[in-house]
Image 1: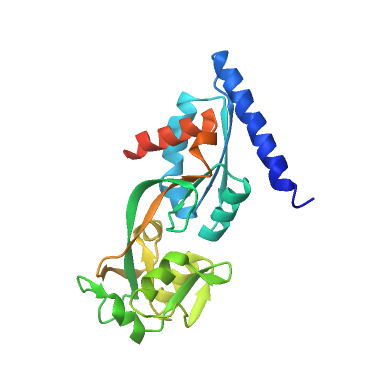
Image 2: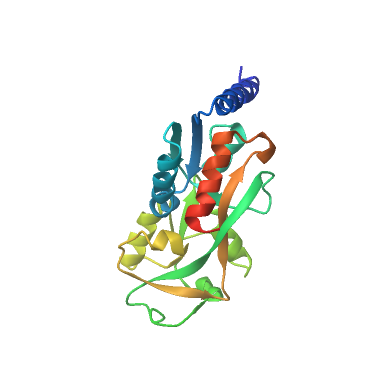
Length: 231
C-alpha cells in the first residue's frame, strides 16, 4: 500500500492537470495549488501574493501548509504540495527558481559587548553559548552549513524547533544565535542583531518537482509570485 501511494498521487495529479487544461479550452480558470513554506515567508510574502492571485483567478483554490525545511522538502518530494517556498539547497533535484538572498545575522542579548558592533565575526561563535534552531531533531541545514564553514559544530547549549523560542532565550541572556533577516523582521524580541562577517546568506525561492509537469494553476501562481515580488 505504501509503495503504491506515490503512484496513485501522481495519477491523481495528472488527472487534475488534464481537467485544468480542458477547463482552459472552455475559457475557465480553475484548479487547486498546494503551497508549502516557512512561517516567515507566510507572514511576509504569501498574503500579498494571494491577494493579487485571488483578484486574477478567483476560481483557483490555494492550500497552504507551513513547516520547517525538512518537512517542506518531504512534502514536495511526496507530492503533498505542488510548490515549495523554501531555502534552495545544493542537493535539490527539483526545478528551482531563486527569489532573493536572505542574509544571516548574529542575534545577541542587548547587554552583549558586541551588541553595537557593525559586524560580528562568525568565528566568535566558538566562544559563545550557542542556541540552535533544529528542524525535527537535526540542526537547521542553513545554520549547520554556515557554522561548519568555519569549523564550528552545530551543537548548542539549548535547542528548540521554534525560532521565536530561540529568540526569547537570547533575550533572557541564555546565549547567542544566528538567524536570517526574514525571520528577524517578524519578531518583537528585544535583542541586538548584527550582520555576520564575512557575509553569509541563504537563497530563498520556489521549487517544484518538474516544470514540465506543472499544472496551469501552478504556472499561474508562480508567475504571480514573480510579478508581486518583482523577480
